[in-house]
Structures are given as C-alpha cells and as structure tokens.
Length: 332
Image (tube, rainbow, N blue to C red; front, top):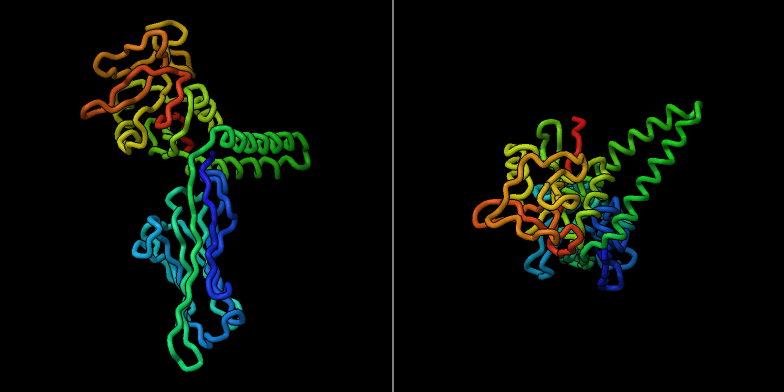
C-alpha cells in the first residue's frame, strides 16, 4: 500500500472546535498538499465572548506530553506566529473573527514525519471574564508504499508531458505549449523528485538520487523509476564517485541493500553498466564477494564492519529493506 496519511477527527464540545485535514488520505510523495486547519465558531460555543487565540500542536508519539507547538494566531496583534525551526517550508495562515476563526498550515508533498496527532486549542474569556480553553484532535497515520500505485502516478506525469508535447505541433499555441512544458518539467517533476528521493549535490555535472521510502522492488523496476526522472541506475566510474555517493547518500543509512547500475546478467563474471552497456569501471567488492554466481547478477551497496562495499544480489529479488541510487544529468 502506498504511504498515506489518514484523518480521524475527534470533535469535542458540539464541534465548536474542529481540527480538519484536507484531503483525508494523502499519498506520500505524490499528493501535492496536506492542509491542517484549526476551526472555531463562536456561534457554536457562545460562552466564549472574547476569543484570545487559536493554536496548533503536533505529536508524533500520540501522547499529550509529546505535543510540539506549530503555530498560533492571537488577538493582540492578529499575526500568525509559527515555529519554523524544523519545517521552514510549511505555509501558515490564520485570522480571528467575531464569527468564524481559523488557523491553517499547508505542507507541499507531505511525508511520513507528518503523521501523529494534531491538536487545535482555543483560548478565550467567558462573560464573567474567566479563562476558557477548548480543544480537538485529529490523528494522522502512515503506511508503506505500493509500487503499482507509484508507477501509475508517474505514468500520469508522462502523459501530461506527452500531451503538452503534442500541442507544440500547433503553430499558434507553440509558445504557450513550450512554456507550459518547461514549467511542468522544472517545477512539478522537480517537486516530485525531491519528495521521492534524497537528492545529492552536483558531482562532475551529475546528481544522484536515493529513494527515500523502503519499496518491495527489483533492479528492473528501479531502472524504470530512474528513467521516469531522466536518469538511470548509477554507474560508478571512479573511487571518487563511489566515495561521493557513500558520504552524501549511503551514510544516511536508509537501507541495508542498495541497487546501482552494475550487472553481469549477459555474461557471468563480466560486470557492465546496465544503462550504457559499458564496462563497470570501479567496484569495491566486499570480503568474499561476488559469491552468488548465476543466481546473483546485480551489484548492490552494503555495509560491512566499518565501511560500504559491493555485494552481488538477485536482480529479481524482492527485499523489504532495499533501496536504489539513480544518476541524472545536472542542469544547474
């Protein structure tokens, strides 16, 4: 199942205070926006005659003591105040009104660390000027990815690009189509790339992409996914390139096994790059490797003792903790 965030709303006090999420199900890395709202209506809770503030909190461990402050809007200055130390890309808006008030946070391409419990807290005064505090919560859960759904979403992007390409055949719309195609590739595709992959800095006019989520994947499917983003399974041409990938991506320790582009499927013992069909230039074999013979024809990065080495692994083997590294041309 593809990663998703699922809303469970637990309203209190006649739903005067609501914590709302749109959409209720988010495919992590594919859905563009996740919106969490704190909503309050004075008509539904008239005992609060003076609204002081709305606040949003988040807890990943789903305990009261674990709630972390996200943002608030108060009556003193009516400005939205937010803690952006851990999530600087979130967009916060809010307003206090006599009737309906709200505080909203939006994330682009939400990830699994947005799971947990969100709490909306309302503070105000009643008619006797005594403090009143109300709250509601919404729980967000995450799940593991589904390869088929991931590919379907990627294919949608390809179809949009193809449709825009077809429009360029029309002379009168050529300029608009070119502009739309450029924007789609540079914005939408880059956003999705950054959501799905850890993207390395530039190395010798190349970037390297390490998939973020653990997939039940084969080397063949990994090559397809790399191709969708204009790349291929990484081809290691030198020790410097290997060390760069090790330090920038493998050191994150996201996977126990990570595919790259070397294979000896065509001729046992003759390791070539899957994409370019050229000889593999640098392979740092681990102790006793390769040892799988005709049953293990794809090269993978693994951690041995105190460093990363290369082991042979089944190209069609499916492993829950496997990852892969793509190589793409840098356009910077």
